[in-house]
Length: 91
Image 1 (cartoon, rainbow, N blue to C red):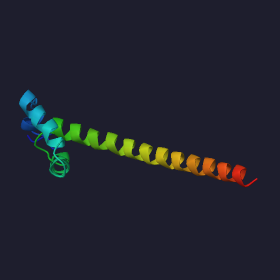
Image 2: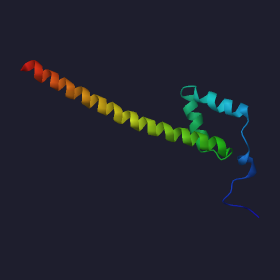
Image 3: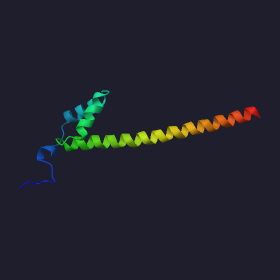
Image 4: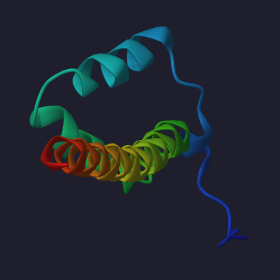
């Protein structure tokens, strides 16, 4: 009987140290790493790798959004202090 909701047993296999090293080393290669990570994020062959890469994308997105808002805050504070300094200089 088929279990339609469950992945096959090959996708439940434990990743070896070598597979983890390849996964991590690929992330260090510019452009190629991103493309391979996108392919692996939607691959059903290895659930462990897929979930790891999806988690990396999620953390990267959260950090990018937080960094964006922090840069806007720093820029706004810089403009505010510049305006304060120019107001003091003109008076």
